[in-house]
Amino acid sequence: QVQLVESGGGLVPAGGSLRLSCAASGRTFTTHGVGWFRQAPGKEREFVAAIGLNYYYTYYGDFAKGRFTISSDNAKKTVYLEMNSLRPEDTATYYCAAAISGYTGPRGNLYDDWGQGTKVTVSS
Image (cartoon, rainbow, N blue to C red; front, side, top):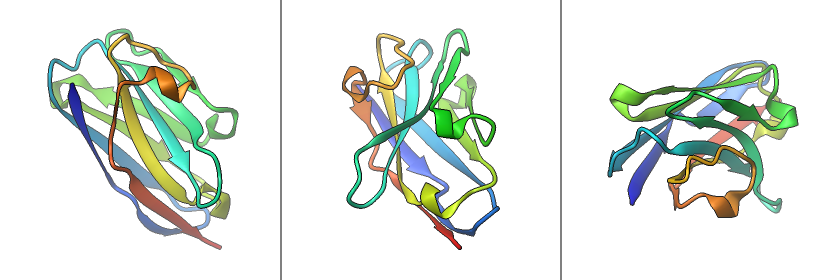
């Protein structure tokens, strides 16, 4: 099992940027797939992006392409989500999740461990 802790959320004006971090502890964390998801109040959970830690393959949800960048620092056991040109509709709680299988896709049920989330609010 991997414990995940997200950080970096906050209040930012439209057009601004934030970098979220997902720090892992516990078992070895070099072959997992790690995904970012988000959930706005009253809405379904939405896939944002994912990365494979041992081959750096990345995969993005359509809305995230060109604005968001996922990256990892395996030595620090941390995955980042750089978010630029933020919009009010990006307001949500952002969660990271880890898949021991190395899965890097949008299906949340294929991830094994989840963090508690970090809240992002984009003001108009």
